[in-house]
Image (tube, rainbow, N blue to C red; front, top):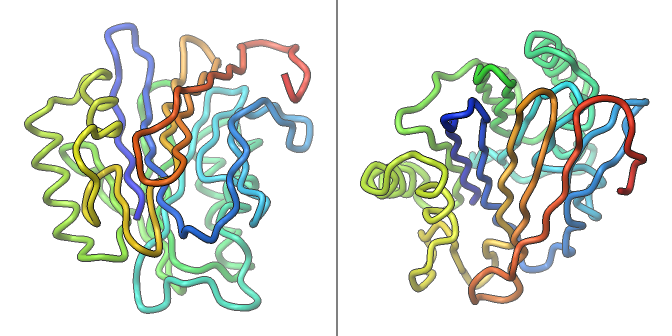
Length: 244
């Protein structure tokens, strides 16, 4: 189960919030930092098990995030590439169309378990696609702006969260509050806890002004509230060594 929401502020910056839910057996992720992919600087956390990521922004102001798509075939099988590596394939793209074309080519050549993906740019344009393991389809952008992946009653969870989001509003502070979710966690909470899985982190990615990227990252240990956030940034323009 994961949850992504997004909004644009009064200064034109695009904010993406991503609650990452994972199995309790999965390794702790590395927090966001500047990395380099084929000469392009990106800002992203890292999944040490798969070697990829679930959210990134690059020096050209392009962002992307990926959620598992829960179907009977959703679990990764032997021979399937980690879905997090697919985002790394898109990391050097300069435009939405280029990222979409790379996505299409990748799923045609390489086996992936089902997923949902959002690709976003500085102008607020968004592409949403769904891969069911055999076919890649464009999907409409939902209103309110929320995408959910859940192994437990996904449509019910999506409706419940959409209603809550509609009550809270869609500005930056409302979305942050929605994801921090101060209530008691259960199997359908945004900050959820189940016997086998839990919400492990929250990432806020901000694109702009200009081709800059910033991230605030709240890790979560155990089933309590999130830890204090750590921050990282990828300034616009050339410069800034990877790892800064």
